[in-house]
Structure formats: C-alpha cells, structure tokens
Length: 473
Image (cartoon, rainbow, N blue to C red; front, side, top):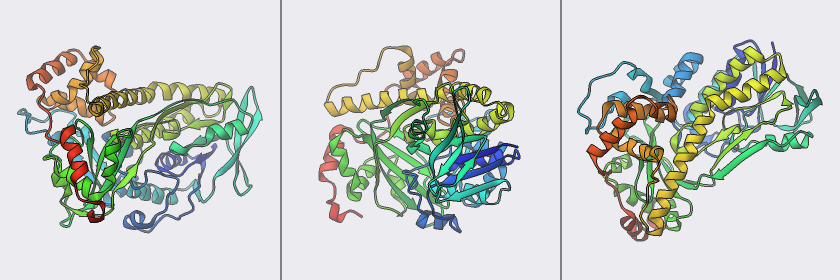
C-alpha cells in the first residue's frame, strides 16, 4: 500500500482518489475550497461555493469516452449520476434528417453518453469520495509547499499545508486544474523548471442556463457545436430538465461584447432557426461571460520524481469541444495503471507516466489546438472583411470537409462522433483506408450548404439594434 496525496478535489482529483483507494492505497485529497458537500444536486447548483473552479457554472458535457470510463471503473458513480437526473443521449439515434441510411450499426452503443451540469457531477463524485474507505478529503486545506529530498535529482516526499501540517507521501498528484500552482511550488522547493507551452485560445463565451417547465428538454436540430460566420452556438443538455446555451466568438471582436446583455443574446439566438427553440424554457441565470481561457500543456523535467500531473493540471484546452472532463477521467485510469505497474520505483514511474501521457493524451491536446487555430482564422477573416482561404494541405481540407460529410453519410457521421466523443483520435480516424476519399466525396455531393444563421452583416445589425440592456431579462 502506498500513501498518495492528491492536490485538488475536482472531478479528476476525486476520480483518481477513488480508483487508487479501491486499489488499497491510502489517499488524502486536499481541496482548498472550504465549502462542505451539499445535501442535494439542486443545493449544489444553488449554493455550493467552488471558487477554485472558474467554470463551475459554465457549460459542461461528459463525452461518450467519459461515460465508458465510469461504466468500467466507477459503476457506482455512474449509477448515482443517473439517479441524480443526468441526461442520457444516444447519438446513433439522432442522425440528421439529411441522412437517408437509418440502419443501426454494430458498436452504436459506444456513442451513448450520460451528462449533467458541473455542480451535479461534482456532487456525485464528492458523495462517492465521502463514502470510500481509504480516501480522506480535507476541504479548506491546500499545499503551501512541497517537501523534497535529493535522490538522484529532486524527489517529492510530501507537502506542507497552509496550516503548517507536514504530510508525507509516496506520490503527490497535481489535480489542481487550470490554475495549478505546481510550477511555482517546484521552483520554491529548489526543483527544476516545469516545461510549459501556452497560448490564449482566443475565445470568449456567453452562457445561459435554462430549465424546462414541463420536465423535458429541447431536442437538437443541429450539431451541439455549430459554427456560423462570426460566432458559434453551443447547446448542452443537462440534468433534471436543464440545459445551457453558449454563444462564443473571438475575444478580439469588440461588437460581440454586447452579447453579455440578455436582450441582445436572445435576439442573436432567435436569428438561428435551428437553435431558437433552445429559448423555450425558464432562464435559470443571466448571461455568464468567460474569457481568457488558455490552451496549455506542461511536462515535468527528468530528475523530478514523486509527483504526477493529472487532467487540466497537465493540459487544458478550449472548453467548447467538451473534452476536459472525459480526458481527465481517462487520465485517472492511466494513473491507476501506472501506479500498479511502477509505483514502487519513483524513476521508473516518472518515465512511464510521462511516456503514457504523451502517447495516450497528447494527440488530443494537439488536435484541439489545431482546431482552435483554424476556427480563429475563420473568425478573423469574417471580422476583417476578407474572405477566409482554406489552407491547401490535405489535412486542413479533410478537417473542413468532415462536418459537411457528416450530414449525408451515416458512417462518416459515426466516425465524426468518434472524434467528438473522445473515442478515437482524429489521426486514427482519418487514416482509415478509403475514409479520406469518402469524406471528400460526401462533402462534394452536399456542396457548400451551411446551417441557417446570421452572417456577419446580420449579426452586427442584431448586436447594434437589439433590446437595450435595461430591458434585457
């Protein structure tokens, strides 16, 4: 049995804590937010203070890959999530009407997901953690410094809390998320610099939550993430008859700032015929803006042992693709396996953990950055008034053609959902024999038909003439 300290009691931290405790390790989770776990999911939404999670009441989605992890590794958490009212979505049964081939395929069950609002997800995980033997969650406690010793490099032996307690550990897991302070903690402990690459994803988000008066929720009539010329619409089903709608665009596009006013926001969404029905509910919030989101990846240097980066503390990306939670759960399963195989040898574990993370998860980070940059280029072209020129390389053309092809080809539709659902990395899907040719042929057959929504000129008119802020509600 090993002693493990997990820094951060969010979803990735609690998932790893649960898995490691069920392997009979002694696990302590330090969560700096002091608020106790609420009594119900609704109390979690209404009053749970989670200042350490910037996006706690922003749009969240659990991809099919995340649902797979819960079913395989934490079935009790999956069951509790369903009991809390999570939405079950079977994407294989939601083919767009433009696809005539409606026959089911073997493996369609992989495309099913179970999703809920972030507070509900955290509530379910936190309740499971409270009931788990061998797992202790200390709320209102954070790591003030790392305890280290020289051991063919710098070896982390535990942490000193902000209350002055020294906790020893065989492994310290950094699950502090996007705001992780680990590089500073390592530096203050005399360790080497943690390698980091980062860039602003360049987007700003305006989200509103709704609740159904009748207990149901709107049925998607377009992709959950739908791009238009100067903005995108993100529609996310939630638990207990709730959902969120996010309008997002380039942070460097000043007119879009008016989307923070509900009257303007509503007018823009009403101008999207396949999305306007998402307004048919009771608003639960005003408009919730969020910006300054980074695409960032970190990598620990050789010679630093006794510590592991997990989830968003390792890499965080643009949340509009909805990959963070699911990949964090995948990362937790990989951590559990790495501890099983190499946990007794700090240097072997450090090397294996770095190699596993780079092999299994780095391709998802890299593909997300590529998608972000391409989308920002489209938005900048629209803002500047010039045409967007699609790069001539085959990979860019294939990525651009895939959404159009998904609208007419049932098998391409499923392949696209494999990517969106974090089931198969894009490079593996695109390299399947004959797939690229099939995508290009289907996209060509469909032509340039796009989803109905305001172009740049119409959007600017809506932003300038929609209801005054004082009347927005």
